[in-house]
Length: 534
Image (cartoon, rainbow, N blue to C red; front, side, top):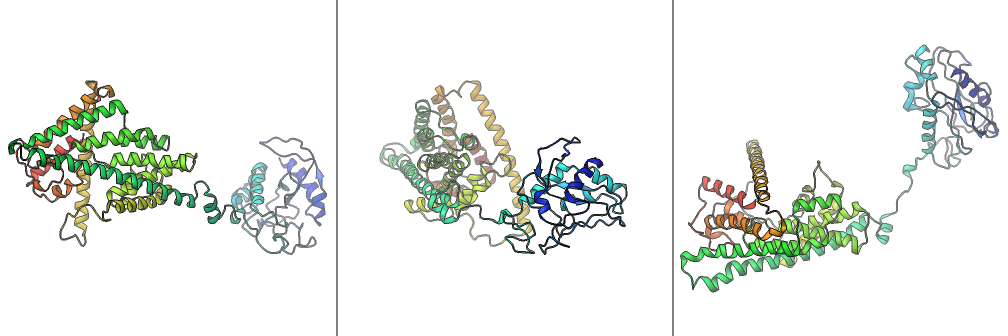
């Protein structure tokens, strides 16, 4: 390798350096390039490089070659290379590039010719021992070639080869990363460039408005039917015509009737899907098909009207996610999967922000439920929160509802918290996690039982709905607190208020006049609620 490097050295530097610039431009010769220990002949090209020579024996000085910033080709200027002395190392030339327009690569004022490879170039023995020579001889020219190319690409095209830019002397080169590589905000706004902030703002306004209107329509229809079925009709037909002890029969009449309608919806309109299916679509397709919207609206409406414990949040998340993806793909003609996914997440965030009444918490929860491995899709957080704000304003404005928290539990409010409160909260959180684990085990056991009897087949959806409706109805007749999804009931349950304050269920006393006035009764309500949800 030493002989090959010596052959490379002599024709390029003429025994110790170049004295004028033209010698570099005019010098053409076939040179072998070392590649994995072999050499081959190449077509004559213009070569540029620098030399490390042992022409002057020194005391082991490892000072890298320096260049002058004067720009002259004479003494001390371009072409004068100060050799590195390192204990009798053979002269080495590093060929910079096989193109004619590559400026010469000589050492800068840094720690060495290759700052990234000082230890490789200089070696482990600064006094010129075997370590330095071995490190130099075993240095791959291909590796050096790559580093030189990287250094060349970091210089602007206007570098005059003397350290100046466009003729200016003594200035450091400008890197391409500082150049203008993207269009401006106004150009993106004019063209609605895919995935840019202006496009995200416009899409968020559209998706937030559409989802806000959809949430308002869903909310209005749902609460109108709840009021009609559970209050208006009983007051008109039941109270004056039935005996007081027979009032509780209204619960199974409505419950079983809505269970049958729910099953028929699945049979004739198709599987509506659930939150798990929605998350799967977000990960795999980036959108939810619109053919799930109608089955989801119908099935969720009938289930909630029958006193089911799953509320409108999860169905509305799927509906608004489908609407967000539809607006992205059909209105804005988006085809990039990540961009479409962002707009789908906007719809999900808008739905939860609207119903929770909290744009930040609702939007973050919509993003959180999609995370399977750590925090996923965090790059869409800002746009999703903004869409949640828009959807919240539209929904609450149309519904004439204040933007505030749903519940008012503690009076007076907790003004501050101490370390003991934090520890207590952590313990309650762990207890909640344990309850969630028990619920998960129970739910999978219930699914196994239904599968054992073949009730998971959608052709038997009516019978499956009746089985589930039977459990919900029986629990509701005994403990009315377990009916419905808990948004309106939670205020009563959390403050252990009388059952008469329950908002939706009628009659509120149930079959046995149950009241949640002790801790054990509160625990019983929680266990029965878990069963009803499953």
